Image 1: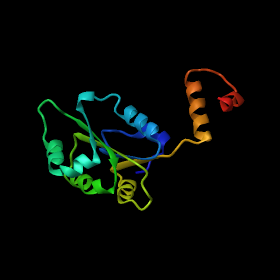
Image 2: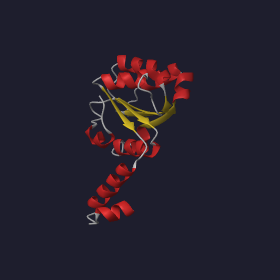
Image 3: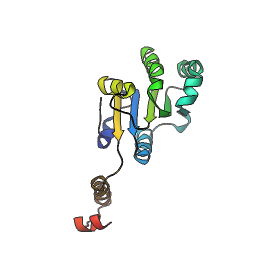
Amino acid sequence: MILKSYELKKINLDIFKFILFYGKNEGHKNNAIADLIKDKDKSKISNYEEKEILNNSNTFIENILSKSFFENEKIIIIKRASDKILNIIQELNDKNIDDVIIIINADNLEKKSKLRSIFEKNKKYVCSAFYPDTEQTLSKIAYNFLKEKKISISSANINLI
């Protein structure tokens, strides 16, 4: 399922266990990930690089499948992902893991990317693109921020900022 970057509040982590964020806007992606996991226990969050996982895929999968008596949920963040991680994602999906949330942070993915294609077509997966900021998006961010803080300011002054 494809979501726009402003629709990310629709992501329910109880339903969607595999999430893909891709694009060049690293700051926006990091903020989206932080917002997504802000209510979660920080000790249950593990960060991996794709290279680490590919070098030790069996250990990674065993780590995810092993359940601690005290743990009821794990959050895995995979950074710098590419199409190479696809087999591991499909293997984890086949295992029907309910207590693990996997967030994949990838760089820019081409339209032909297998990883992107699977996340866009599968209803159990969520993906969102994060493109570089334009003048329009920056003015929208400023407008929303000022509106949230209840500061009234004209459009001309927002454009000046």
